[in-house]
Length: 224
Image 1 (cartoon, rainbow, N blue to C red):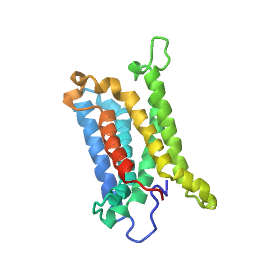
Image 2 (cartoon, rainbow, N blue to C red; image 1 turned 135 degrees about the horizontal axis):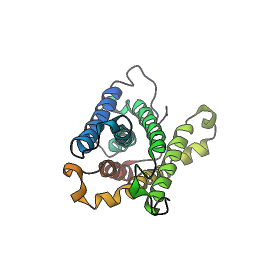
Image 3 (spheres, rainbow, N blue to C red; image 1 turned 135 degrees about the vertical axis):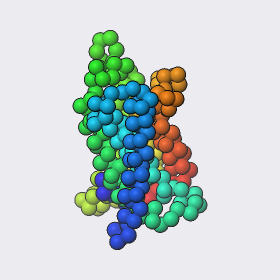
Image 4 (spheres, one colour; image 1 turned 120 degrees about the horizontal axis):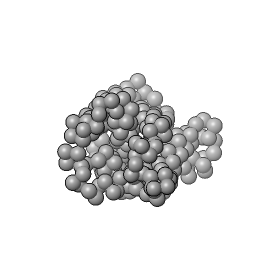
């Protein structure tokens, strides 16, 4: 995903990239461990795949929000350091890689025995879960298309690039991510009594980051 919020390649382009990436992943991992293992009683045998998948999904979302939001924040007049702006490229790459890992791990985990609330009595997905997965697929495809549009083979088609990277298309694409989180998590969000240790679900934490990022993009994003 080498061109999310594409930046010129310079010697210092990754100055803050890895600290941002590692601190983001550390936050997501620690939150997941505390909420599910320490507060929720989830067996530690589920850490290597089930819980790690949750941490990766949250980390991916935060990294992509950072990637797509720094530019609009600068447009709104905030003094964003150049070291942060130059970090967007690598942050975006790692964010997309984590999205891909999350999709792959979720595909393996997705079954009634693991997520009984996602299926009805007939063994098929509920409407809310179906809408969530649709949003997730559209978000993934949109993100992939955004990156591909910067490929040298597509740069010749300026109309295509301008369309895919336009403000309207990006804002709609971001809504796909929001819908994925909303439909998969809304039932749990409305039941605070069931929150492990009073800690909001991963999906709600992610949706909060998404909502803040979306509002910033809505106000500050300009066409490339």
